[in-house]
Amino acid sequence: MRLSSALPKEVLKMAMESILGHKFRSFLTILGIVVGVITAIVVASILLGLRQNIVAMIEEYGTNNIYAFHLTTGFGPPNREERLRKPLTEADAAAILAQTNAIEDISMVRPSIGSFGDGFDDNLIYEGRNYRWALTDGVTPNLMNITNVVLTEGRFITENDNSQRRNVLVLGVNAAEALFPDKEGDRVGKMVRMNGMTWEVIGVLEKRKAGFFGENEEDRKVYMPFRTAQKVAPQRDYIVHIIKARSDKVQTALEDAEAVLRQRRGVKYGEANNFDIKTADAFIEQFDAILGGIGGAAIAISCLGLLVGGIGVMNIMLVSVTERTKEIGVRKAVGATKGAIVLQFLLEAMTLTFFGGVVGVVTAIGIAQLVMLLVPSLPASIASWSIVLALFVSVMVGLIFGVLPARRAANLDPIECLRYE
Image (tube, rainbow, N blue to C red; front, top):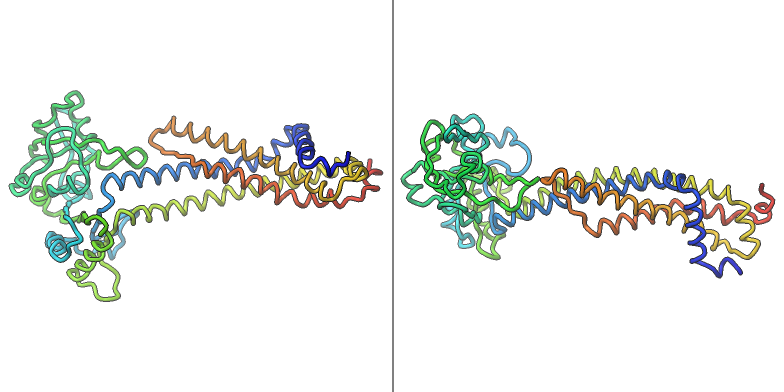
């Protein structure tokens, strides 16, 4: 029977026999492929999991929201120019509401009044227990509706609480559990100490479903009325505007709010904003840019592993051509064409790297599952496309690096091959 008539089934069978006949050598050959695939899939799964968490968290707070602040929000500390900027004001919020109908409401937040050494000690104390990790904000009552705040106990801050500057607090779940570990459902009305004053607990926040590495900052929040924060921490004059746009008018609301703030803050035409204003989508885009950099580094490492694996495959296939010189001569003598010989060695190389891809995928899935088991707060989500892509790239590495050995085998002189010892 002519070899060419048995393609590709018989050729694939011979390729498998060759690989299985040298198991350890084959494993060492594909090790670079395995490492490259593991790196790509594990990093991609973690980055994808992080992104899904960020998107879920932003959606939970409200996709129609726009955030304005005098400093750049997002990642990294402010520069010197930003630190010299004047904070936003209550009058800015009133002007924005008055000059556009694309905005439904604006909430104001005095963020982290106990941070940065501003003289306000937000360590919470109750009957010998304390909570030192609070992120204490002064907020307007409408924050509850704008950011979809949900309570498990009590009520949220009211207009009366705010106008009368009452010493009342709404606790995040972390603070509530630290101060009242055995009093779930009975925390409202308790009196706690903070900054040398007595405060009444009027509500407890529900734990947010989405978080970054399993944590959501709101679980550490302690909310007091906006004007109470003005009274107890007057030196902390930073204000964040959380602007709720009307449905389908987010871009219009963004442009209108930006125009009002530019005019009020004296920004001339052509000059950059001396404030930051972002939609929820902009935060996702900013995070995507960071993930892109990390993903690029992971791809570079993965490509290095695939390159090493490809060179190993080419080397072992060249050795295989030399070892099977006589066999190649016999096959050519019985009618095998150059194309049949090329296909045989290409299939062998592609099968070898495909196995490397399979081993890498299985190992990567195992590592991702182990990471989630040992560190539940570290998200990992393996997409089916990443598995398919990894296997495809593995096969293509075998195809590319198998060309030279295959061509060398096909070009051997059958007479010289039969004389080879």
